[in-house]
Length: 306
Image (tube, rainbow, N blue to C red):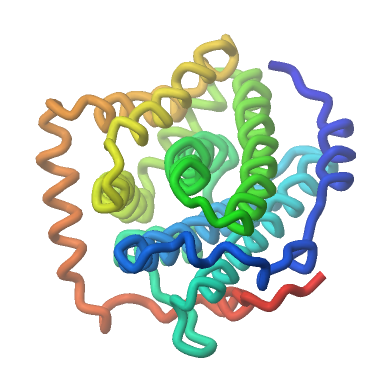
């Protein structure tokens, strides 16, 4: 799973795109039925904000990367995730889902993860971020984005998500290559990072945010009329690809994240009693207790800037 990161960086630079490359006024909006329109709006709003979860994670990883090449790759990934969010917002505007310049709010589970990352991500080790972010990317790329590409006929949407999916494929390739790279460290160092991370109270907050998020993503897919197995098949990919690398398998956090993914996939596991309960509990969190949108969220825009 060894990767030439310099070559990957060159590919990333060569395959950049902008919202201005897409004809947002092209025909095709009539393919969105009123019934689909009603279901799609909250789904797209959450998808847009989940892209920003990835963006915030990559911003933190850029500060931890061991080489300048990898730091630059993460800076590009940060910008790409923001571009994906902006493109999805532009699609919502195309489909008349926004009231003027409205920026739709995420569901509370996405909001809690954004709050957690915004407050604590910069203090987390690369071995933590580098194993958790790929799981979210797998779910995003393999389930949510794939659902849009399979189910929405609007040609502008198809064009947009082909570009997004191409970016996400490179993100995942780098994610797993970095996990392989991290696994070369001495086990003593990896265990110290694991224990040190889990002794921080902030990580418990992160777990209580992350656990219901995946189950809420499942609920979102089911609400759209899609079999939840689509999400589970996407999550399986994390373990299937990770197991190909003897070094990724050495990462204690990879093993924990993979184990958690297996619990999510097993619908008969008692884990779901806890996770579904957390979804219900977090849904009742008063908005007044949530932090205001982070300052970087002001960069979210549907404007087709270059």
